[in-house]
Amino acid sequence: MDARYTHHRRVASAWPAAIAAAAILAALFFTSTARAQPIERSGKEVVDQVCANCHRTGVNGAPRIGDRKAWSKRSEQGLAALTSHALEGIRNMPPHGGNFKMTDVEIQRGITYMVNQSGGHWTEPSSRTIPIADRSGEAVVKARCVECHGEGKMGAPKVGDRAAWIPRLQQGFDSLVRSAINGHGAMPPRGGMASLTDNEVRNAIAYMVGAPAAPK
Image 1 (tube, rainbow, N blue to C red):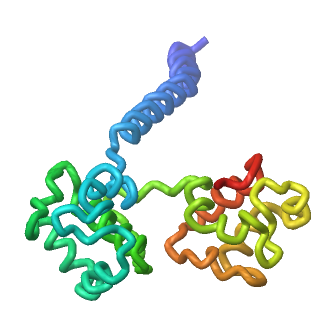
Image 2: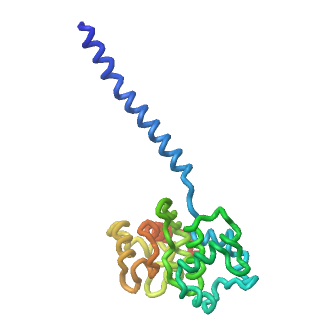
Image 3: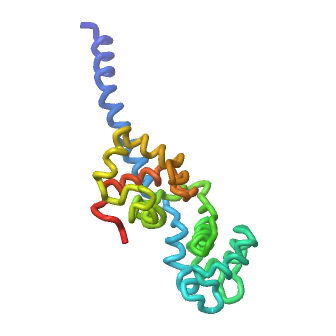
């Protein structure tokens, strides 16, 4: 047998193993990179971890979360102005709320969350480099869907009532998700919570179908 032919056969037979090894290395690289990628906190997380110390009770003159009158005056200034105040510090509040590990986007999310908890309807900002993680189905349901699906208002299938959900699933889960995104019957698009992503809507429906009972 020609030596050159034998050499080419050996090289060719080595290709599948080389490709497999390269794929494994690439997977390990991207997995480790993804794990190392920091995840920015949501507005609620920022508030719970930092802002709540003053804004839950209104200590030191901080506008209390839920005080519509106090926050309506501030929300009129817009997110850019409120963010500037938070970054630089204002009156009794230190710069960055005293936590310099927070990114500017996290601060904006914290402000947005407090505004929305006090009667506002702002959309939580997303980072240009690090997208905000989707909220869990349970979190979305407790924040919004339970208002109707908890007690079955206006014919809404109750959370965890699988017998009520099964007929709605006959056209397929994706069809049910599209219906929730676009609005159906008495339910407005995205359940009236415009900031919900498609995945968050999907998560909420999956939670309501599979939950053992309505959250309280």
